[in-house]
Image (tube, rainbow, N blue to C red; front, side, top):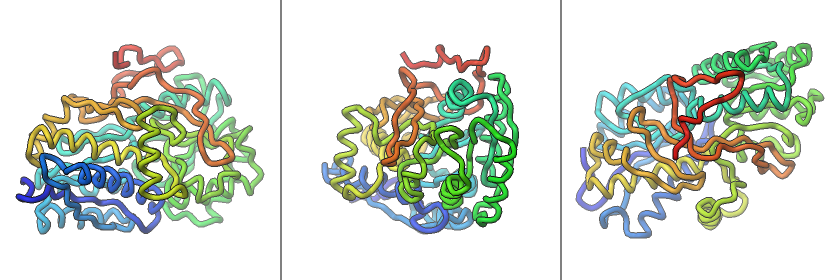
Length: 384
């Protein structure tokens, strides 16, 4: 499929309601910001980007239905969307069957490749690997794992268990809760954590349940400075919903934090605030969604076509100075070179960056490179 004569028509599928509304609204805002900037600057090859957007309300089956609608009734081939693995896997059959192209901005558990997806979020080697090393070295060897009950938490916890054990640590508990877990369920988990006495908790609980879990963690008397929750997903927007003062000391591994001190991020932060005001938090969810639209636009300028294969071929040769740092799409995997970082929550809801890689790291979604000697060793995977 190609765009119409006057505009480039693309689809946007992010939820602004439901259990995932906080993070997915940020995805939506980052996407809208990039498209607005591109259009105000004259579009791509003189044609504006036109958006057809739907709200799947955090429901994976709605994602499946709306993706099919975009690809058929709406005549669209390029979709920016999905925030978690259940959603991505729900739309994948439609995307591949119709030869569309999904731009997926979230970190995920790895072990997937599709020629019809550009994965711009972190792979496990870009967040779980350095996080496991950091937790063992700075917090202690005993970790408790808790997650929502779907594919991303179970696979991420499997990876974390292997990493912790390879670093000489021990997993002292592992529990899964429903996506919409009630307060009494979370309280039982907290009771189990108290009995296990871990050095840190690795949480892959997501959405509003994650927010409730963090609140109840403090209510149960746990001190994040002494026994932090470590996450791959807890970012500035959800911290604001929880109450930042309750979260100081918790840890997140991500490739972007709003407090990142680099010129491209200063520009992005200024543009985001001008568009949405100072009250909107700035996090990896909006920044990643923004960056993938910008690199898509560069590929589109080269191809002059929304044809899936031509766009994929073009994007493989591009690099972008994104808010988080230099990014490029790896031609072997369709995943993205990114710079891993670890942040610790401050009382104001921002992050102190306590560790970061020296350069972008090659994505390794199939974990072909393993940690050696109890440390994360990936020198040959560092971009020169």
